[in-house]
Amino acid sequence: MISAFDSIAQGLKEAIDLNNGKEVAAKTHRLESVDVTELRRNLGLTQMEFASKFCISVSTLRHWERGDRTPHGPALALLNVVAKEPQAVMRALV
Image 1 (cartoon, rainbow, N blue to C red):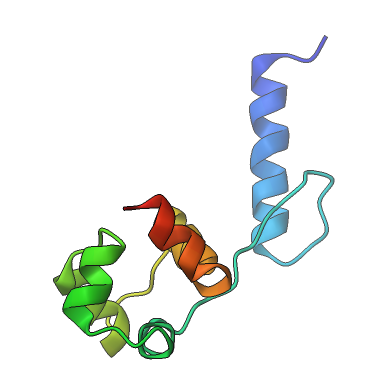
Image 2: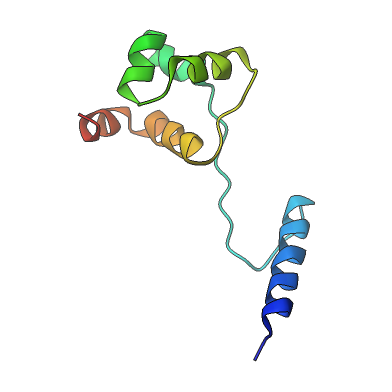
């Protein structure tokens, strides 16, 4: 049986390898980046409308659009879904 230390050490090694672009045995998911300005404009929404519809603060949206910050984690996942199925997301959030 593998010890907790060995398990953690193996996970850390895999994380480092993945970060360095190496293949790892673990299944990984990398979300595509999203051009938030283009997405919003393609939907025909103002910043206020987009932020309101998708529960994002206007301030955060503006930072993304200026390039000061980039969406990551759950926000990036939401934006990828909006980019692929905007009407489904809007129906689900009503």
